[in-house]
Image 1 (tube, one colour):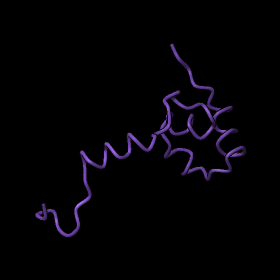
Image 2 (cartoon, helix red, strand yellow; image 1 turned 90 degrees about the vertical axis):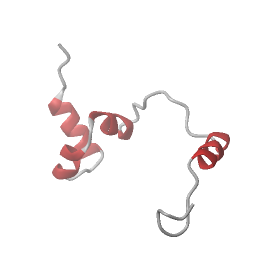
Image 3 (tube, rainbow, N blue to C red; image 1 turned 120 degrees about the vertical axis):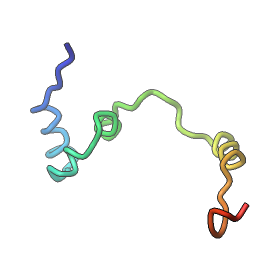
Image 4 (cartoon, rainbow, N blue to C red; image 1 turned 45 degrees about the vertical axis):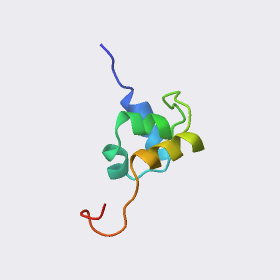
Length: 67
């Protein structure tokens, strides 16, 4: 069974990252890991991928009926 080191995580979040208690408890484990420098290992989003996503999901000006 995986157990969290709550005292260690709380120390890292509240003292190390200087989060307020409500900010700490609102984070998901993935968000906390990322903030502590333990990312998912995925490469950051590059310009080419961003351009591809913008083509697939373009921003529209105006209301939702504007296409």
